Length: 300
Image 1: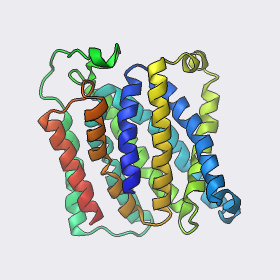
Image 2: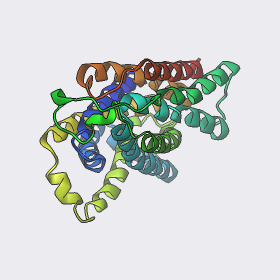
Image 3: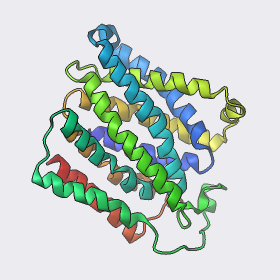
């Protein structure tokens, strides 16, 4: 779960760089269509592809639903949130998915919540309130990062859009891990489970290429954005391999909160590659810290 968090942290930073010059939908094509072959190779290398028959039709149904909600729609919403308010601000908002996952796991998977976890729930809820800017400021120059329609996000974020897409992401990313955990529980086929979810997302996404302008836009994607999205595809693949491996071994109430440490990794990677695109205001760092502490209490 921690390895997944580190990979997702790097993924958030590379996606942030990609959506600064490319559309979120085009990033989806790159990350999912590249991720699926990687998962197929991993399933072959691990031998899990040959054990696919051990899963029931119900297991596959849960994984397909998880793939559509989490990998396809949830990922698109997360890209839109990052494009609107930046990865640092979006982190605590999207992080409320931890709360949703834990509550669903308690209700439907008979997992337990302790009083200490209750405190964590409160912290996870209030963390997003800290990331909103106190007042509007003039956009800053980000010449070092190249021209972009999203360059002003750090100082002039679209908070309403970011919060809407962030909380929608949280809802879907809260439900997704529960479905995926239920699909791979007891099988040990975490990597094959990831392959199924990516395949379901890729099939539906392929049909969207029939929408006028989508195929042309994807083919003519900005060169810099293409490379950042390719990096995000590899990061996301690794993160999901680790995530599914964790879900095949441990409860949602352990895996999901541990993965919330991605905000710390993401903060570090943003400092390295997105210093001019992201905001590092004290209140934003405070929101990240509170959200992280809440997730930590949820896992204790």
